[in-house]
Length: 185
Image (cartoon, rainbow, N blue to C red):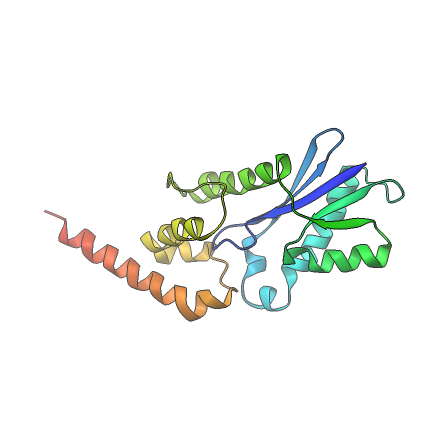
């Protein structure tokens, strides 16, 4: 029996991150959320997202009736699961680092996109399930458009946010505001 575990949003600029667990035999998927607050300030410095990931996966495994003696876990290679790997080793849980593709990856990325659209209000048609630079800039531009109201959704623990991107976001916000004033009649 196989359980897959994958994440989404842990490297994205804004919003919560998600962990998905899939029992391959019956297709049952469980989702768990890592709140954006874990990716800020002291929480980030103290690796709270990694600790919370362990707790959430333990809960998810219970929901999927994980059996240590007969189940194998295929675990995404992402660093959000570093503490989880240590836990699995300590507990003698059979797991393999894997590339997660297909049903679970699609579902957990879909959960992230639904959160960004429905909970945060990101409307861009360019926002897709495909992570990477394009999605970063869709989210960055969304923050810039209403910076002071949207900065609270940013994973501000990321070093580059504080050393590069925050200043660029404020600069872009100011240009947008200036442009809006110039286009009024």
